Image 1: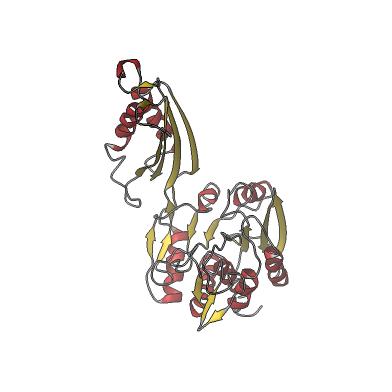
Image 2: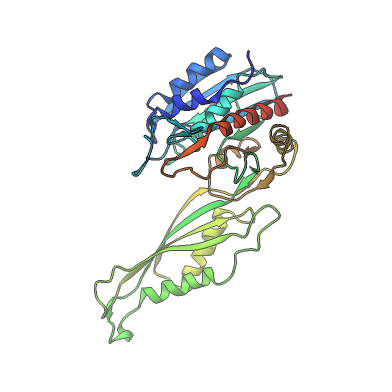
Length: 370
C-alpha cells in the first residue's frame, strides 16, 4: 500500500453523485471502487430505499470502525456554484456535502491507503443519516452484530471542529424527546365561562409546571437539560368562542441525568394535575450518551496533537448524530471538519483543510491500531 492518498478527487466524485437522502446515485459504487483494491471486503446492505455499505480489512482485534454518511440534504436555491459540480475556486471545494460529510468520508478513505499497523479497520457508511435514520446505521449495526462484526471502537466523521481542525472531539450527545400534547375541554361562549371548560387555560398551566423550574444544573460533561415549547395551537377563528381543544409541542434536549421514559412520566404527571382530558404522544430520536475519557478518547486526543500540534477539547454539545445508535454496541466519538458551512448555500471546504483532515484520520488509525 502507498501513503495517504489525496482526498480531493474522492470528495469530488462523491459530491457529483446527487445523493439527496435517501437517493444513492452511485455514491456507494464510488466507495466500493476505492476500498476493494485496498483489500477491504465490501458488503452492500440495502434496507427499504436506503443503500448502505460495510467494508472491513483484517480479522483481528483491535477493530476500529470509521462511520459516516454520503446522503445529503437538498441544496435549496441561491447557490453561486453548482451544488453537484464539485468546483474548486481559489483553493476551496464547493458542493453539497463538502463539509457534511462527503468530505469527511473522502478523508477517511484517503487515510485508509496508508499501511495498517495491526488489527482490523472497517467502514460503516449509510445513505440514511439526513433522513428518518430508520434504514441506515441502525439496521447495519444489527447486521454487524448478527455477523460478528461489532467493532471495539468507532469514530464518526461528523464535522465537529468549531474554529480550527481538530479543536473539538465529541464524546457524547444529549438526548432529544419531542412531546405532542392535546388538551380537551368544553367549547362555549366567552360571556358564559361557567358553562365552559377552557383547554387553553389548562394547557398553559400544565406547560408552566414543566418550564417553571430547571430540569437540572448540568453535569461534568453536559450542559443543563433544556425544555422548549415549540408550538401552541388552537386554531380559533373568532374571539368570542372558548375552543374545545388546544395543542402544544415541546422538545427536551436532556443530559445523562435523564432518560426518555422518566421524562415522559414527568410530562404526563403535569398533564394529569392540570388537564385530565388529554392525549400525549412522544418521539425520542435518541437517548443521551457519554463515552467517558479512557483509552479510546485518549488515543483520539493524541492523534489530534500528532496531526495538528494542538490540543482538542472534549464536548457533548450540538444536535443528534448516528453516534447515538453506535453507542449501544461500542465506545464511540466524533471528530471531523470545521462545520461552519454545513447545510448552507454554497457549502464548501478548503482543499488544504480536506487534506489535513485525511492526515488527521491517518493519525487516528495509527494511534488506535498501532
